[in-house]
Length: 316
Image (cartoon, rainbow, N blue to C red; front, side, top):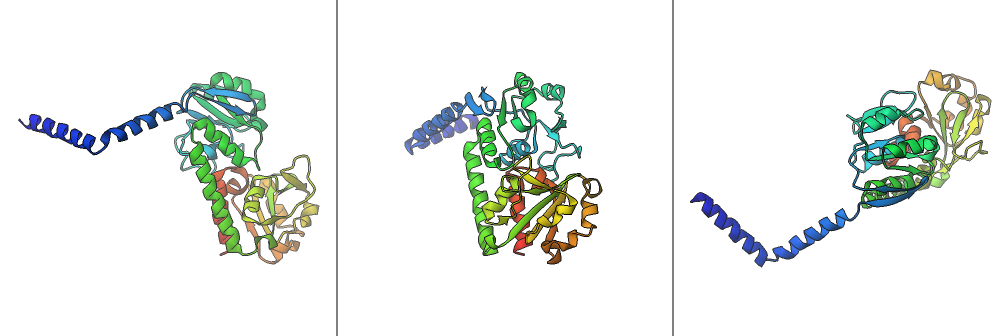
């Protein structure tokens, strides 16, 4: 009797929903599902040509810090990722979200056997790092490469999103970032009046990052003026010897080390005679920043963290 009553109530409820317009809603839901299914397979154009992705990726492997940042920003936890050559761990600001992701070598030396063992259905990287092994990677799984890195991080983010089927999410996240960058510029007041010297100690020449770099784009989005120096072999940064340090004469210095301060050369330079001569040091505006966030990590999460930390440093 109770079963019959329950069945009768269910039927009545169904009829009531139909009378209240339930059928059009069901049709809309079906149409939405069909539209979602139609998004794959898809063909993605990228630095190495075109790649067909048959289904929405579920087992993604990423081979650079920017791709790991992008995937996690879009709510996708890769099955495998690489680390840098100075740490066996993922970047500090990504470590929590990347918990459980398997390490498949370093950026410089991805482990192809480990990648294949994960049976990925999508591999993301860029031609700057891995052009030489693209053919091998593409034999393992559909592979999408960005053409460049650094100042192209937004375009790379949208490319990764296209491969993952998450374009709308990516566009909204970038819009939110740009709005926050603009708000920070307004909070600073006259950001163009403040010059920044971004310095990174990597062992050997000191890198003074330029507008065509990741941090250069973030500073530009805020409206801050970066101290420009003659370009070296790459447009991303100029190289300074310890004797040329005073060319980094920005109102603010943002400095970090790739690896330990002793091995990178930072400790020796900061203890040297020219460091105190920098205007930023004299005025107490030389700030040690986290390398993972400002220089190694190239992506949306890093950019958002830069905005937060620059607000603390420049606005208070």
